[in-house]
Image 1 (cartoon, helix red, strand yellow):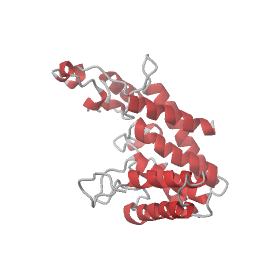
Image 2: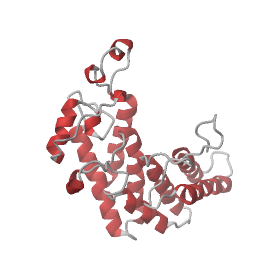
Image 3: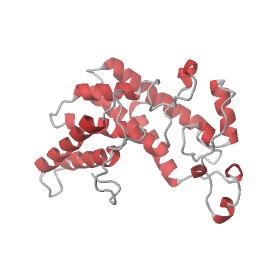
Length: 251
């Protein structure tokens, strides 16, 4: 599934596997006038391409054929697609196990590896809420579909989903009840940087404020990033709402 249409050779994990998920859900619903065998074959082809082309030695999924970061949703969407395929008799349990274990390994690159190794208990995924919900969906799907087969891995997945949900509620929610987007506290604000210092003991960490967390109106853009107001986006809060909805399935 093409992503940047100006570059027809570019194909990404996120678009490919979200299309696979859509095809599988449509198949389960009867096809909506489309041939279900064709939809199912398409979904399988999407998953095969991702696993065969984008898998890293770490067990994670890279962004696309040209590389890119290991965004959380790249691994999450293919894991969830594999979970859905199980319902059609396509058992890819070993692929699912490899993905789930990699996604829960705090020494692999879905996590913020800049958090000190001595503080693995407070090392979290580095991504934003609007991508993380798709990883949570994959991990919760893994628990539901493969949990009896792989209880130890399912327990790890449950722990990470629960741990991250508590973390986001505690640190990303403002007094207005809305959420900032990024799980890396030191990119949000100086107040969040202080929270990071207290949580990790890493007093040497400096702020790396992300302007995407700030207002971008003409007046705000005239000020330094640190002086712009923090913005609570629909995208970020929608992602957080879906994180809570998905995590609620295992609470």
